[in-house]
Image 1 (spheres, one colour):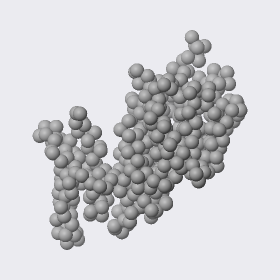
Image 2: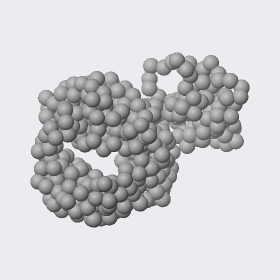
Image 3: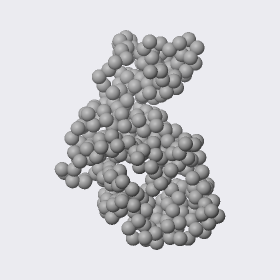
Image 4: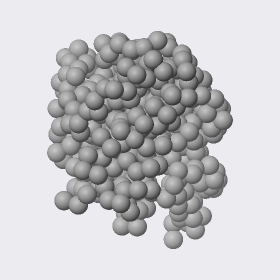
Length: 402
């Protein structure tokens, strides 16, 4: 098996190294700067001088030296330096998942939940500020300020932090972080590629680790089930040239049946207490899609009932938009379009509103309105595969399907 590319390896190791340094030295901002220096050194040295036998230990040592240099420059920290920096660098193997530990650390209960999630996505999850802003439906500048405030607040909090797995509020933030990372991996908000398999795989890996820690938590199990059931469709979501293939047109024989089976088993294990959490409900919706052999076999009334429950439990404009699609499938496109009007202001910055409206106008037999909406959606999206698909749909309708 070939070694991973340096870029991929560094992306994987960065949160692990950051977690070690923050847990050991307690200074998030200083540790983050030191890790960035170490990553830069590795990127410039490893390809020319060769990769070290223990890349993780190498990064920790280099980052420690960077931190030591910074600490020495501050007289107030000299005593701490003498006691802390003498500790032994751990080996590559560890029983703890440093990345997951760091997620809990960043999701500190004294931080506003939105700020904690945003900071964790940026500092640990590796998402760009623009990607995080798109997930939260806010301008990039607003999200940048939110992340900066959260980082400053975290730097002022006392150490060490307690284990966050037993804190429901902090656990909820971590689940949100994992969900957003998976979603960005499943469908990239920008760029030439439809998805980023590295992000979705890492989200699944960490959610598996969390499920091992909390096997009886229904929302953890629900989130893992949702990820697996959704990721099972990945091979069928794009064509030979990377073009987007929407759910109704996918070759379902290409869906990963093993992942579907595992996801359904996980979902079933959460059901004795009923459907009480948003990730459980979303997993149940994904399960209904996964169990339909053909798109026309989809149990749309049950999908609509679940989206209605979800929208009532956690009101969100994107959930309402999905409910509009299910409403159209059960009660007709006019009913779906009426529902989209209720989230028009909230989703004015998102291309998904116009894309859904284009689809519903197409269902309603109004190609002119559908073309207008598809063009609007294409102008708003930063994803090349999504833009190309929307423009193709518009062109197809404009030419009368010829």
